[in-house]
Every structure is written in C-alpha cells, then in structure tokens.
Length: 187
Length: 213
Image (tube, rainbow over the protein chains, first blue to last red):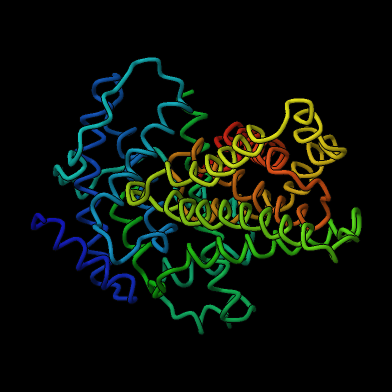
C-alpha cells in the first residue's frame, strides 16, 4: 500500500465521520491529482485546461454525492480512480470525440498538478440561480455562508431534515447542470 | 467557478455518512419488488390449487430453490457492481452455476425418458403463459432495483443493467413458481431459465440509458 493510499484513506474515513477539515484537505489533494490526470488525457484529444477543470469539478461533486458508496473495508484510490475514469469516458462520449484515449493506466489518477486558482467554465452563481428557491436558500446558508443547519432551517422556513434533503438534492441538480452545460458548450 | 470555491462549498458543514448503505438499499428494493411480484401473481394468476400432492410440493420447492439461488447470487454481485472499484471481488461465473445445474438435471431427466415424451416434458401446457408471465411480473422489481442501483454509483452500466434484469427475472420466477403447475425439470430449465435470461438481456440493453449518472 502506498503512502498516498494510506494518507487519502485516513482522510476519507475522517470525512465520512463528518470531519470538515479532513474533508477539505482530501478534496484539495484529489483536485490536484485529478487535474494532472485529466490534463494529460485531454491533451491527447486536443482539449484544454478549462475542460480538464470542468471534469475535475464534476468528479469532486460525484465524490461528494456518492461518498456513501465507498466501503471502508476496501482501498480508497481504486474507488476514486474508477469514478474518475467513468466520468472521463462519459465526458468523451457526450462531447462525441472520435479520438481514442488509452484509459487503462492504473494509478495515473494519482499524479499531481497544483493550481489553486484553476477555473472551470461554469458560473456557480448562475447555476445556483436555476435551483428551486428553498433548495437554493439551503445551499447558500449552509454551504456558502457556513451557517448551521438549524439556522438555515429558520431562514429558509423549513425543517432541519428538509434543509439536509434540499442540500443533497441541490448538489445533485448542480452536478446534472454541469454535465449538461459541458455537453452544450462542446458538443 | 474556481475549484477552490467548490471545495470550500462541499466541505462546509459536511454531514457524517454511515456505512453499508448500498447493500441495504438494494436489499430493500429487491424485497419490495418481490412483494409487488407476489401481489401481482396472487391477483392475476393465483396460487396453484394442487399443493396437496407430494409431487407438486417437491416441484414447487425445486423451482423456488432455483429462483432463490439465482436471486441470492445476483443480488450479491449487483451490490458490488453498484460500488466503484468493487467489481473484482466476486466471479460472474457464480451466476451461471444455478442455470448450468438445472440444465444438467433437465438433460438427465430427458435422457432417461423415451423421446416420444420429450415434447410434452419440455413444452407442457403452460410454456406460453410462463414465457409471458415471468418477464411481465419482472417489470416492477426491475424498476425498483434500477432505482436503488442508480442511487449508488455503477460504472459498468451494461453489466449492472444486466444483473439488475437477472435479479428481477429471478424475483419474478419466485412469484410465478407458486402458480405454475408444469412439473418437469426440462420445463423449468428451458422456460424459467430462458425467461430469466431474456430479462437479463433486456437489462443489459436498458442499463446504459437508465443507470447513467
């Protein structure tokens, strides 16, 4: 087992317990690894850094929404790598590229590329604006302004479990918007 | 959007997540699908009336054993297919075992009987009813199973769809077995096995469209 596996898995386990600091650090590390992975893959089909960043963000959202599918008894890196590869194939398919990219290169998703300012083509404010009102309110309060779920419940006028459900639904809708927008722009 | 901002957003007030959710969701879906399948069988077809003879009971047990084995093995496989990177832990060949076993028993049974009886042993009176009932009863179990798998993260959509179809076909066969009075091994091998395979093929064809995330 490599150090990165041990380290990332420890962060993932803490994240699943609700440790926000570990989760932030995990997502940061994953971003730089995913960025290097996608830049390398997309360069071969003539796509640039912005498209790579679109994919990085799609995968980060997927990791977040699908984190319940990680079995803590298994290795963490194959889980992430499988998602990264799935999203790459899905992206290439929906943007209808005919070029073939060799996909089976094991641990390549574990390369590194740090660009703290890296930007995708999506405008989060615009995307948020397309969400239903209560969903938007829940996400803005808890996820952007950092308020507690209880505070958000009062502000948005719904129950606490309603806020949690809305956040999950909202992030899922954002992921769908992002995937669709990418298709629209490039396809 | 800066990736850094997305990371900040995702990690703000993150909720703890429990383990074993995928397996639980799929098991619940299959149980719910089975309940619906049994309901449809009871209302539309009814339980076979001749369950007083030993032969009827033996054959019912045999059909149930076949269908329950298919469902048990395929649910375990499906749970792995629904989680990224977990596919390797189980051999898809395990799925073939119940089908191979019933085909072997059917063939032995045919081999020991005069060929004049073969037609009757394979077709019975109910082959058409079986051919239609199992796929139709499988529709609802298939839908709820797909719904549960979609909530997880399948990455091989053809295979996950196929195994969801297999689960649904097996569940449907459990329900149909309670009605079916065709008591011959070759019949079970051909019509139960065949219709479950049909459900599997339909699932493989629908998987990529229904399971994408």
